[in-house]
Image (cartoon, rainbow, N blue to C red; front, side, top):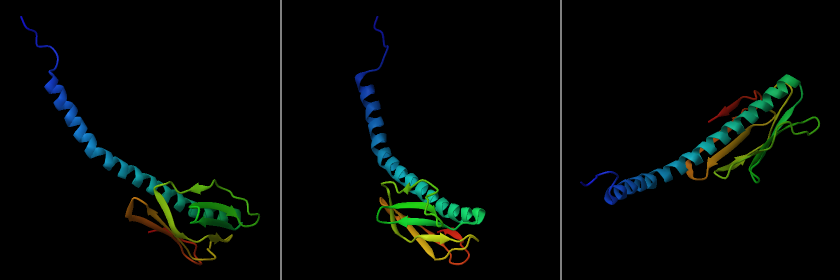
Length: 144
């Protein structure tokens, strides 16, 4: 008697081909998703840095400055009284670009001494961009 256990070579080839087609479709979408996820994470971190600057100025009574360096694509928070950086350096990931930005100083009452705009763009999808805006006087931080 003949046994019919296992799979034929044709069945295995068809399954492997289907898996290959699915991977071919999924990999570019996964890469795009990864770039977008890194981008949104960095935007949130940058927004938090500005909020932290304002909150620390209010809570400590000491002015704080959010230093934006578009050339090196970094953002960092420091006290204005002694120039000490109070939070770790925030570096844009390879999928992000700080297109433009200005440093903003928050005074001890939480107001901003200058207007500040930081525009962050996803390098892999030009339509994916956000602007963090700090309003002069009030110190309000908005993400647009």
